[in-house]
Image (cartoon, rainbow, N blue to C red):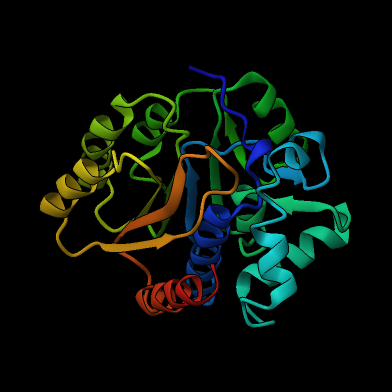
Amino acid sequence: MLSYQHAYHAGNLADLHKHALLASALDYLTRKDKPLSYIETHAGRGLYDLQSEQSRKTGEAATGFARAEAEGWLPRDHPLLRAVANVRAVHGPRSYPGSPLIAAQFLRFEDRTHLAELHPAEYEALRQVAGFATLHARDGFQVAQAVCPPTPRRGLMLIDPSFEVKDDYAAIPRQIALIARKWNVGAIALWYPILTDHRHMAMTATLAIQFPDALLSEVRFPPARQGHGMLGSGMWVLNPPWGLADEAKRIEAIFRDRA
């Protein structure tokens, strides 16, 4: 299925959770004078307009990143806020970066980036803003299997599916196991939604058995609007960079106090 478009949801509270951890991880990884690989299996379009018709229709950005920014949820020097400020300096104050452009604010010339996006319209939009990366108009898990282990071997992969199909929850642990077998030193991050039926729980239970030392971070928040089924956001990270577990605790505390 290719109906999902993140423009309706960009900058929501789930993005705040996911992107705060992603930016923190990349900020740490790029402090070392060693090249890395960055891989995304479901990259999206890379750049969003928070005043677009899609964004205003759902109101998720207004109750998400915009609210957090106005209320000062994150410290001013947080890596995510720095990344957003850099993107807005180029693309204007209404813009919000997806994960590819957040990553681009930290990645260096010697780093290597692979971005996969199967949706034709989303891929074309991504192509306009992601000249720094090798782009793949293919299934993201096929790309992950093809490029792993990457060169350089040090690095991070973000798996951020739409979860349009319930079978995704059963398939993802198998995919991660295959990737981790090929790339045992890579940080592998999985984002997932927490929905009213808690369908993610079987998936995270399987991952906990397979990878008992992985980081699990979950936050809860009210539905963005009446009838909206997402109640929270989860990030699971295999081989998390140093300090990410502490950052996850800080982000979780912010959501408990503010959301």
